Image (cartoon, rainbow, N blue to C red):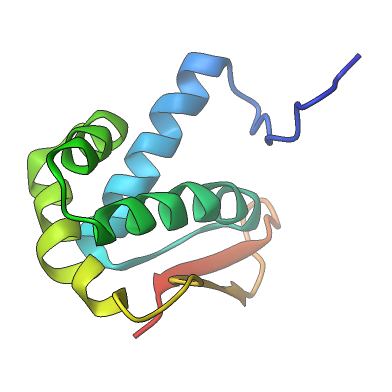
Length: 117
């Protein structure tokens, strides 16, 4: 039975999927927006929302958790110094997904995920 297994497989093993999500979150933090497939964007969105919510409380425990999830000090520093302070008064909904035309090579559904200004 597949109880509590709602996450997308994305055609990868667990370790590969974890590494993919980590790199997607890193790219989203560094560039503050990126184009990817719709499934990947929908999968990374809740993870990113939770990290921004954690970063709004600028504690040592929050910094350690974000660093453990992203694994890069520059991206986590940017999250705490520039991105999280924008959303102090906002209760949620820090990212948006915008659908784009399908990719010509394999007709994959494309989307752009970015932070709400």
